[in-house]
Length: 336
Image (cartoon, rainbow, N blue to C red; front, side, top):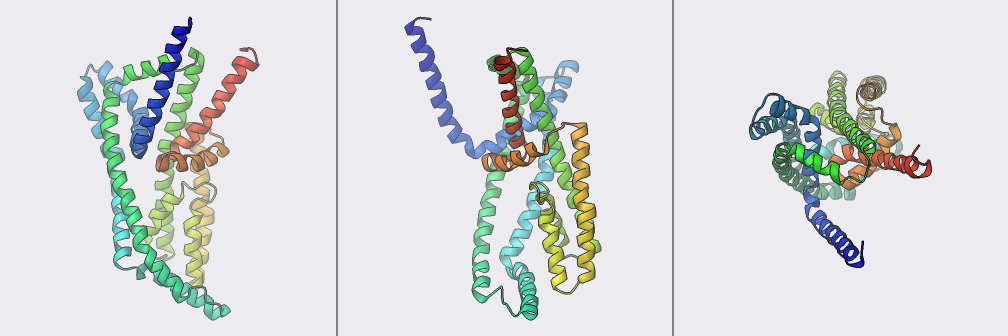
C-alpha cells in the first residue's frame, strides 16, 4: 500500500469515526427505542425467517404481522403499566397529603416514643414543594417513553424487512474469524433472550406475589405497592426488600405489629426466595450468567442506556470479557 492509498484509508476511517460520533450524539435521546427494537428483533427473528422463507410469505406482510405481535405482546402491557403509573402520579399531584400522611403518622409515633421530631414543618413544606417537580420530571420521562416506543416500532419493522441482509453486512464488517463471530453472536443471543424474557417475568411474578402478601396483611395502597415492588426487583442486591421492608416498618410503627411481622416473614421467605428460584431456573434454561456480571452490568447499563440498560449492561460486560478471552487465545496463547 503506497502513501496515497494509506492517506485515503486513514482519512476515510477518520471521517467515519467523526460522523459516527456526531450521529451517536444526535440519536442518544432515541437510544432506548433503538435498543428495544434490537431486543425484540433478536426474540422474533426466527419467526420472521419461518414466515418469509418456509411459508413464502411476502417480507412486508410478515414484518407487519410480527410488528403487530410485538405491539400486542410487549408494548401494550408496558403502556398499561405506564398508564397505571401516570394515574397514581396524578393522584399524588392533586392530593400530596396522600404521600405526606403516612410519614406524618410514623413521625408522630417516633416522637411519642423517643421525644424526637424527625419530620418538622420545614421538612413537610419541602416535600410538598418538590412533589410537583418530581411529577413534572416523570411526565417528561413518559413523553420520552412515548417517542421511543414510536421509534421502536418504526425501526423494528425495517429491521425485519432487511433482516438477512443486515445480519450478513454486520457479519462481514466484524473483525473476527468465523469461530469468534459465532461465539459473539451466540453470547448476544443468550444474554438478550435471558434478560429480555427473564427480567420482566421476574418482575411480574414478584410483583404479583407481593400484592398477595400486601392484601393478606393489610398493607396500604396494594396496587401501587405491587407496582413499585415489580420495578424494585431489577435493583441489584437489594431488590424487592427496598419496598416491602419500609411497608412492614410503617405498619409496625402505626401499631399493627402482627401484620408487620407477617409481612416481614412473607417478604423474607416467599418474595426474596422466589427471586433466587426464578433466577436459578432462568440461568439453567437460557444463559448461565455469573451473578456479578448481572449485578455490575445492570448498574453500568442503567447509567449508560437508561431502562434498557438492564438488558444491555450485562451484555456489554459479558462481551468485554469475551473479547479479552478471544485476545488471549488468539495472541497470547498462540491461537491454541
